[in-house]
Image (cartoon, rainbow over all chains, first blue to last red; front, top):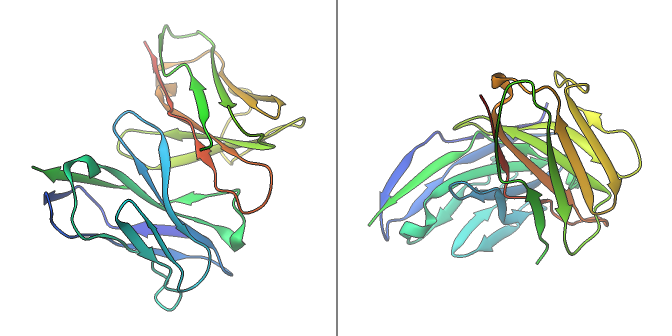
Length: 113
Length: 116
């Protein structure tokens, strides 16, 4: 079946550090891949997406590349800020359909000033 | 950008009360809306898919008589937690899928439900 596995948190970094949050997936066919961010007490916001192999999604300094050969979609940012503290969810939508989304368990990120 | 309004943001009520949560798409039409439940420090669990003008599709293990969903228009879906008990306390999040392919879901800010 379809599933998403992401690194467990919490992840604690100092401001301006480099961030990587690993995400791998299992899916039949060619899913769309997403990263969502949830700030404290809020709902989810779409951070970035990629719909086919080798696509790179990017937003607010975050990037993730759709790697079909390694079934991965790792989230990276070169220099994190305190305001990036949140929970990050990797997710997939099977077979390029944007309806039913399967979420990973989330990774809590703490950025220290 | 696309905005989804979810109301109320927080509810505290006594056991046995029924609670209605509204999910509105403010600047787009959504044939399909989704209801999720999130336990503390855990991921989102899809509860049901709400389709305008038809019955909702519930995920396995979700009681349809407990969680009533109505999607009466292209911009509004409601979730009613009937006869709520403490174990129903959770964070409920809705999302709306804009009509048309290739559009991502847009999420509401969630409703924190606390049953005493």
